[in-house]
Image (tube, rainbow, N blue to C red; front, side):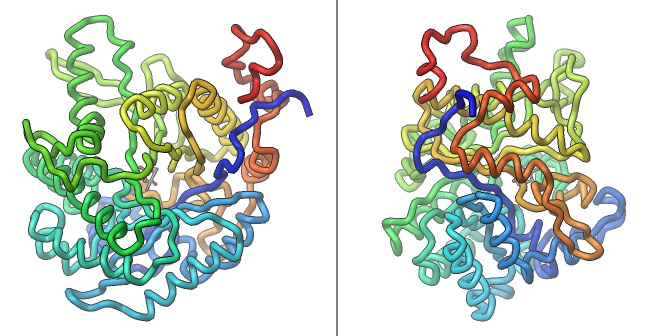
Length: 443
Ligand code: BGC
């Protein structure tokens, strides 16, 4: 093999999924209810049996291991554990014990997600995350997990604390379909509080577990705008969506509350989980950034989600996290929805090259999780988008190992990317211009 972009020893090569998106047969949370409303989900899809991972997890894990992955980010479905107020379902605890044990048997380091967008119906009826008092119920759920799963080494607290406030409370595309800026701000604050609650609870019972936030950071492309005032507005939007998270972790600040300082929130993450998919571009009308595009104006190639492909954004994001956060970084999600698997292969290599570049410049990135392990339920987009390394036939539940899964597996096995792969997909070598010796290619 030619010279390769080697990754640090013990790098985690994994993929990611969430409980509700793959398990199937979840009928007790806000998403199940939401999906019954006509017109809210593309093509009228319903999550239903989804990929039936609840029943097939053992063979799925075996397959992922055979594909050389050594880690998996997956989750626990809150509404299974606490189906009714003050009721804990022991059978479901047992189920997730089996899941976690199976990860261990297959040598997959588990990153276990506590909250990934869904809440039990009974709690939704009480006002969900809009009511700060309801965080008591979240605390109880975290305590149940902390007590029952001491074997978990890595926990993810809240998946993307900005997304439910934005899509559920400001744009109204997710449950509970609210459109209110004050609700957005309130729920964002409660998500941050919930993160801190989860962190403290798990640490109280299992101090050696590593517990961290997972934050999505679309790349806010300020540079693109030539006018200073537009750049300023874009950076204000970036502040409201992204910077608030760093301010919470570094200074204990709650979003949009000047001078707040909460000891419980400050330093409440052992690692930073970074999710990255695309750039964000604001179209201005009457001086206001009225429309959001998830691609840059000149980009013609998009994914099934309509998102532009901009690998450098991942590099920029990692370097920003490096500056703002002192601990290790994991890329907890990065992936593409496409019907062309070749496009997926290129996407993966192009993004990994940027991860490598960031590492070579000192970023402490310790793992990468491709989104997603399996094709799955893509929320309001239903089943159409195909993110999986492993394809699913939703009728038969048959698994199809895509070429990209094999390619990703060979990168994992080699713990590096060969230059042949770069040439194959015509990806620019980011080091080309300043390589002086061959050693410059490796870390
Ligand atoms: C979420 C996933 C989702 C993915 C692709 C992430 O923001 O964590 O649940 O499927 O993006 O849209």
